[in-house]
Image 1 (cartoon, rainbow, N blue to C red):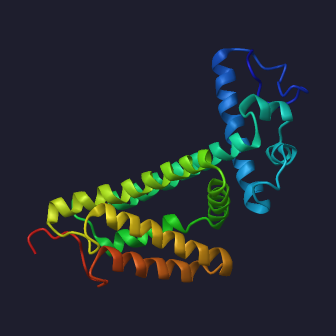
Image 2 (cartoon, rainbow, N blue to C red):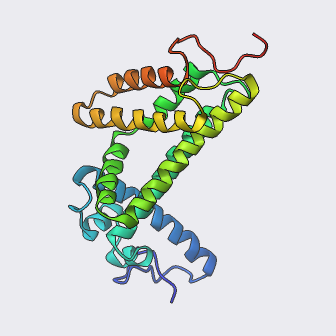
Image 3 (cartoon, helix red, strand yellow):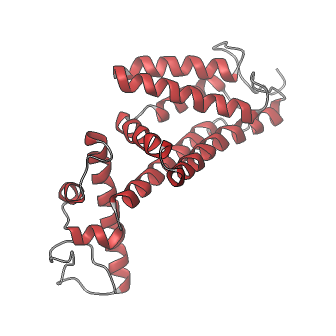
Length: 228
């Protein structure tokens, strides 16, 4: 049975729309995206466990039929939301680290990564909710661990390429150890940020930590030099 997107009818379908497979697919993609965006806003404001399906539907402008055409439960929606945002962040971190080409300008890369990681305080709230949820549920923990491993890989792969090109390893040893430290620093800084709401201080502190972890601590240090 083809699921509708929840525009008009009580079951979430727009009876006036042509029932072609391509159109239904495009509409479902748009509907799913709107539900995820609305859920992100609601979860950030109220917290997971304090949100109803009706609240998500109201924020998205859809009926319950639209919700159940895309998700079986709020848990499934929360999983999908976390995966989508986490993959986006990991991709942005990888892109920020890749901009220098074969040479890695650590201070510049740190600035870019810091901007990405601390860009959206609402994401930090949702991420923290997911962490607490994962601490009580092994299945959820697997999803979180998968994301964290992906984030570490994005950092470690870039550091390994820089070291292979320039012969300058990270201070903490191998790239994998350095990547673990980067993620740990991010966790610590974001915890403080959630409490004091001081984004600029958090960015400055994260820059300091990452520069110290990835170099000798000098703001002028580069992990890669082409012959000097």
